Length: 241
Image 1 (spheres, helix red, strand yellow):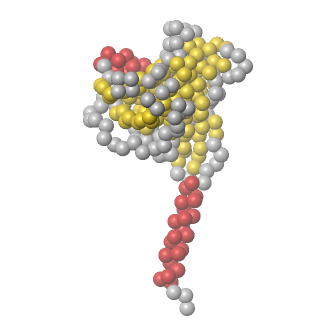
Image 2 (tube, rainbow, N blue to C red; image 1 turned 45 degrees about the vertical axis):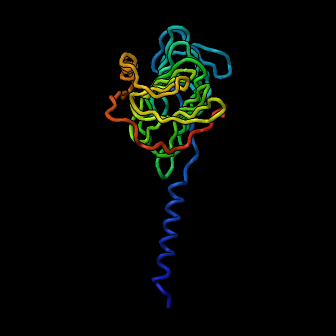
Image 3 (cartoon, rainbow, N blue to C red; image 1 turned 90 degrees about the vertical axis):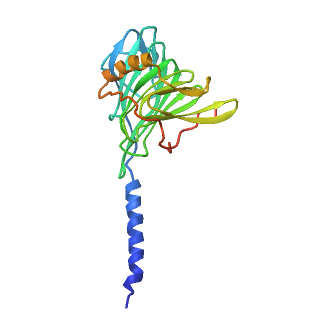
């Protein structure tokens, strides 16, 4: 006679294992596109075939080098509702990765932006999965935008200034040969050269908030408390590290 009390835990363990595997199984990752929603002034892109003017409504692919001249500005919608980004004047930027992967645990997005020079700002919509990532490479390191709980808005300028208007972020950077990290909460900015987190100046918040509010679903919520939540997801290493 089979002892049911001994076989049931095994069946339960097997069921849990199969469920876990089922949640992790995914289809192949798909590359999302970027849509140009507005262009002001002179801006170009280069996908390897030479520089060409950017026009409103155009679809760009990850890997294209986007450049703006003095007075130029480009607004991009990142595919699959990842968010929106404004490429400011005198800026060179590349969206290195923009992929979407459908899994049993939700839609996982993986975005990495290479800000080579200049300034960008934008919003990252709330992640559909805790495995999603949104990273911005700058000369000194990598900024991870955490939209795990809420929409996050930011402004990042080279070489090393990071403003988080709403939400949370972390900056992993190298200084004096040492890898360091700092957590930045909404309403604050960080500059490793000066070495501290300070409140964003009201005039900067007002200026950036106008641009953020013009983006689809862009909202800047004034911070009500200091950053206390741990930041616990992986940040890709930068070239300097």
